[in-house]
Image 1 (tube, helix red, strand yellow):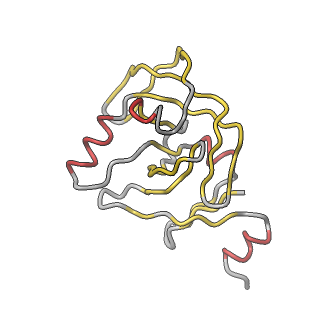
Image 2 (image 1 turned 90 degrees about the vertical axis):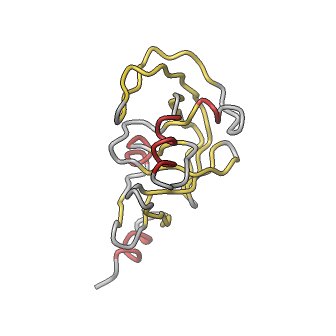
Image 3 (image 1 turned 60 degrees about the vertical axis):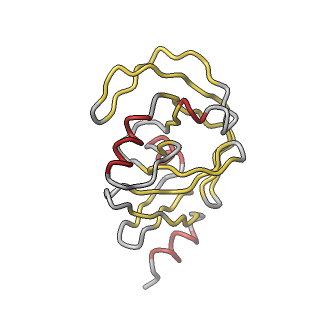
Length: 145
């Protein structure tokens, strides 16, 4: 029987390595608008997000949003929306991708308290759904189609 990687490769999936932090977060590298960054891969986050402090770095064009963000330990956070971005994770990419922008300082402060690396943002379920994601937790691979 073929292994998972060979089967998924035949189906057009791209294999992307991720790391598991001390805090059990999944860390993955992604490129947004040509700029590489570190992200948490979060199956529980409905949308991919970026911190306000990274708007210029990743060449985002924010616009107003009526949506309020909520996450572990915080609710009702002000957000902005950045439309039409180019996201690349490994060899997988999407050229018309939207990002939610909000204050991620509480996320990075919590990571730093546990001596984990801060992140630029979060890759959420929107990417996982678009990319028909399969996560191989044991071998630390994300597969996107």
